[in-house]
Length: 193
Image (cartoon, rainbow, N blue to C red; front, top):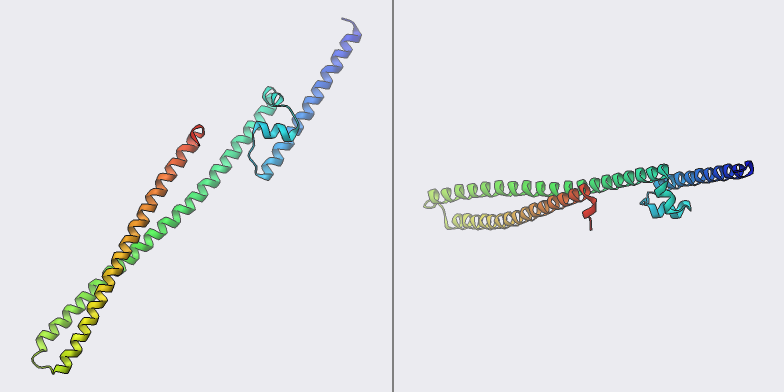
């Protein structure tokens, strides 16, 4: 081999090294830009945007490591965003269930109070019925009827609240199952559909 050939070889190696460094710089710049844009990072997208071959990305260890690190970072950010969204959804379902339970307790308390009041009034009617005029008896009967209607209304409201509570609990169970499915998918991304 002549010195001329060795000089050409050295020049070709230097040119190739310079070209690889320039391509690596484009890869790093492209990855940084894609992270700022918050777009998914893949070998194909980096190759297309950085104008380098996929072979370069697979064969150059620095480029391959940069793309792999960016992909992991992207998956982590997406998983965190998904977790945050699911946590917010779960919180709203839990809040609805708690509100329904509180309303149900309040309705139960009101029904007990109304029944107690009806019992007291019925006792007063029986005790004083002989002494009262027909007009007073009619007034108490009307109050009694009103209270019974109120008890029926509260019972209906109670039933409605129990149905809402049951629906809220069913929704919460569904959300818990959905959360478990998504956690399983995150744990094993190969099974995601």
